Image (cartoon, rainbow, N blue to C red; front, side, top):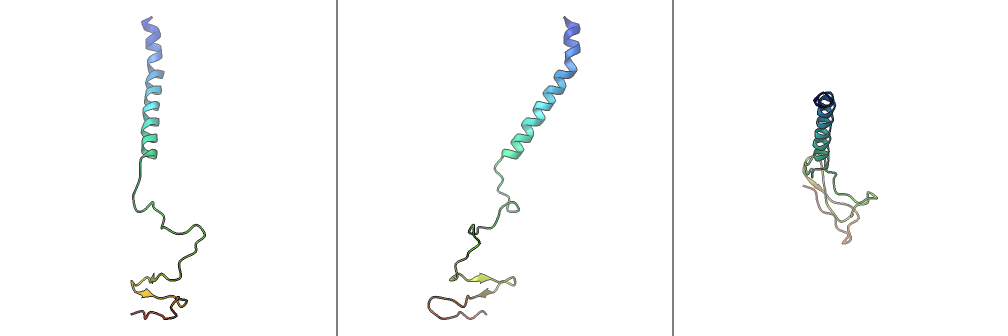
Length: 77
């Protein structure tokens, strides 16, 4: 009977190690990840934007859209 257990020990160890690895992988993949590199910018699904909003230019300044409801254009600078 002990020889049977000795013969089954290596496959049982491999199976146990495999299960531990699967559990570790699933915990890693299923955890709540809020890192800023993985988040997408908030945008409408169709890509449309509100024309009344001011956009940030790459240099940090603001630009105004020409089609403002009140007809005025904000000066950028």
